[in-house]
Length: 154
Image (tube, rainbow, N blue to C red):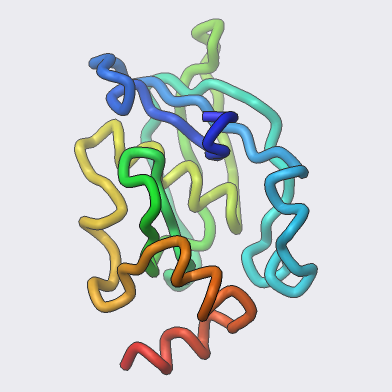
């Protein structure tokens, strides 16, 4: 996960039939992201942690769209609508019950990883016209707002 770099990894991605994922969004992963984009995504560092048997028990806010990628489909990304905020119930690495209230990018990461545990990947949720390579994303869309991208894809 860290070598990729990625912000999450679910057990099924490495061939393990477990309801377990690890999440970490290091500050260094955002070093090349503009302050405006960080604010737009509500992206802040998230320390390493484990979620076991996670369940999204509530969502709030209108869905928001951002480009998402996945270590299982390296080199591609697409616009994916997701809830802006979630409440997740799970166990931590010691088996202690935990409730996570997350918003912004952290909420997106949680939804993405929990999808993996339920047999869903981002291409099942993406806007199909937005599927692109990371090279094209960087070349053509990196400095555009999400609204500009959505308008261009209509």
